[in-house]
Length: 83
Image (tube, rainbow, N blue to C red):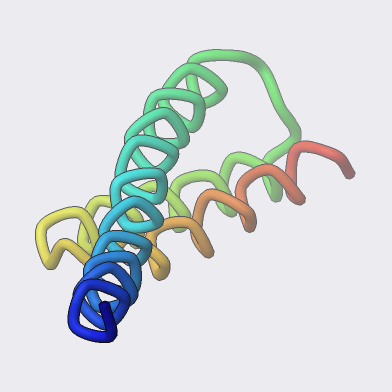
């Protein structure tokens, strides 16, 4: 009985971070598409500059597969659009 409980607990701990990383990956990819779409629209020069930097950084993080860092760049882009 104890073994099955420990096995279940171990499996739950291992699966949870994987699911979070998968969410970050898909959110990052959606964020990249959003940034690219916004760059095609008219925005003030400072916003365009911030979007370009965010896109560059996010693309770098995609290559490195660092999804939380990519999400930081997406959040920066969204904040720039709210100004």
